[in-house]
Image 1 (tube, rainbow, N blue to C red):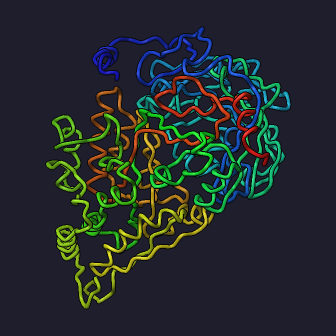
Image 2: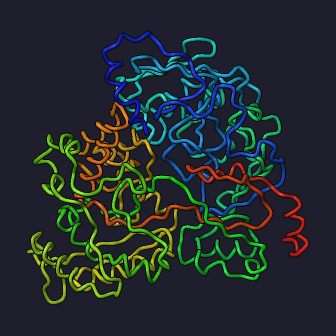
Image 3: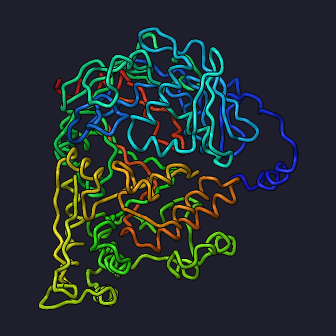
Length: 604
């Protein structure tokens, strides 16, 4: 999207630059901001949306902490929304953000630092002002005591310092990482005074002091949490907030699993669902309420990059250390049959870690991609440099004889052969592994895959655990195979280190659950992070995508390019949904609809 200005970048490198750029009301990685400094509200909101009413969601599993920033415990749904950030993103333009706690942002000409000037009216719920000291303390604390992902995310931010009564400066290791000003702008600001008498590293069920539009009203530990809109919220009239945060009350009720939660929704126990199971969407909502129009179902399109959901191998396990083994198991997942039989044909097979975007590689590598990759010959599979990547396919009949033969050939090359109906290595040890799940409804997808594995003598089992245990095991990399997900944006950056770097794979709580440990991939990640312009970002991301795909770290799943939303007909929303988000915070309670619905149904 920035091809038109790419040429100017290289010219600018030769021109002396001023010491600092002009302070601005927002940041964009793609060029000019859509909204000017005097904008009144985002285009996708109703600025006159009425305030009031309540909305109730479902959450799965349980929770044991109200501090969402540390590794310990399972944080309550919605708890990260209590803390305002320096900037807030716009959902109708890619990679842009506007001042929230910060009034202006000033990026140095050499991009080695950024200065945020805080709004004088910004305050915490107790009335105390949000100060540069709070910002500096938050940065230092998240990096030193927060979840390990914060350390990776802020790896190139060397220091935060107070530079004025309302100013805080972040200093970067280099000026190459174009995302760093925006990354620190996403940081929630915590109260230094509040946490000075509390242990930040421990789990807590005490409601922390925040600054956002909602605070905790009540907590039923592990079962429910209710948030109430702050009556005197300091940022209510800001342009970035007009038409948003319209409900007086937001509640999350916890359910044992998603199947129970769906039945509860149809019974009217809560109000809205974002559906991610195709079978549920096709037939699971049939009910008197749906047929009477009391429940609405909508498919809302979006332009959000889909990233990668997949069956992920833990390559730390010896059984999955050989890429030929991982490639072989790709032949045994019959997506075409799965999509036709289980998903009602709803999905598209994922062929890239950056699917549904221009960042996805396709075809054989182009000359510019080869120029990036050339350095890594010998460190990456030879096919990275020559071939088009494609996942194995079937005719959807369930007959995968050709794929079975291809898998056995690869496994034989890796030292695994069938003997007496079992796939064994040279020592006679059978190929065994466990597939870890936290959603029982996913078993119907995984079990046919495991049956295909069984046809060549692999003893694979499924273990479904509760969400808390699942999260704990994944954070400790205590699994053989599991469903993994890597979300992407239109501007991949620092999060790629968390996903793929060797350091992340060795740090408990890192997002590199796959255990990727390849210096070439580490360097490709750094090239993506430090891309100077949009064309080079696209090229470098294509190169990284190819390296990941040909490593066969996953069995790719599927994706869909719309939100599937079911809700009880007592809400209204703006006529246009933004392309880069669902924007539920722009919906509002429609009293007339709610009253009509209540007249048809007994109270609950």
